[in-house]
Image 1 (cartoon, rainbow, N blue to C red):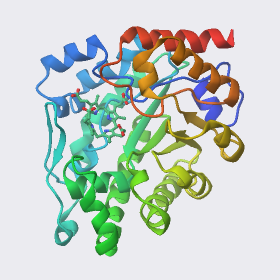
Image 2: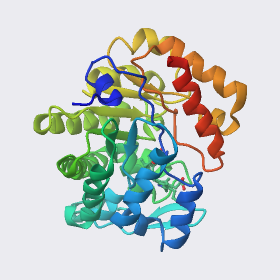
Image 3: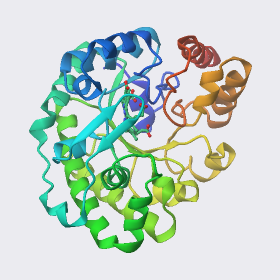
Length: 340
Ligand code: CP3
């Protein structure tokens, strides 16, 4: 058995080296991604064509010495499989058909619609080098609900926030449906071969207090609990972006195995308050990767010195499309040289 650094850290073993991967490591900053993207019909078509999705998932590992591949797909495939119309418009991001509260009952998740995603996983697994880990993912129920209620991210999800205040029971109902669909979706990803899953709660920071407990922590706890019952050996990384003070209850109460930190989390504080509880991941500012040079190096060395070898090196959010490829090579070199 080869040891895998990412799995080692997530299961409490000492890794051979610091695990390193990057959120959005496959994407527009890579010329080979843009090449495939320009030849395919659209982004959704790429996600749902196993040939293309497999190739794009593996691209960053061919270029860089990373420890994991993350499945090339999108968190919005779950609403799509629930019957919601979805379009990714050039330069505009995703646009979804907005859900009305009286139509929540009509949503029905059809796993078959995402069969190509599971085929992609099987293909990636066949080609993946022995020491690399394959990460699957979904959006957290709250974040997916945000997109389903508002339809776009243009207005900071003001309608979703409004639901949390004016009609919390409808939001509970919608979130329950999404939680159920996400469980089925992640279970199928695991059956197809992913070894770790990450739950992206990109908009966790929009809620505080009781609403944070009700719509972020509770559904995540449900999702994690149900997955753990079926797949006790599959580690789950939670990423409640910009949750601030919510990070602490999140790590204590959701049951996730590791916690992704956004760039705003104070690492000194995280080291004392969060790291003794679970392994941590992150939190280099993607803007520093965009900039490169001494500032990036200093920030990376600070993370590695402070957090030690059982920390999962990553950004605090996804690689920005404008990032020079050489800066990513530089990041990988700095991390690898630090340990040798
Ligand atoms: O490399 C990877 O990280 C794996 C693939 C991945 C994508 N999206 C591909 C993608 C993952 C893990 C996601 C997650 C995702 N998708 C999130 C959570 C993480 C985060 O960024 O907060 C969210 C909120 C989405 C929804 C989404 N998808 C948005 C808002 C957008 C438009 C913004 C943008 O960057 O264009 C997407 C499109 C998208 N998803 C792209 C990629 C590579 C860009 C599509 C393109 O090529 O035009």
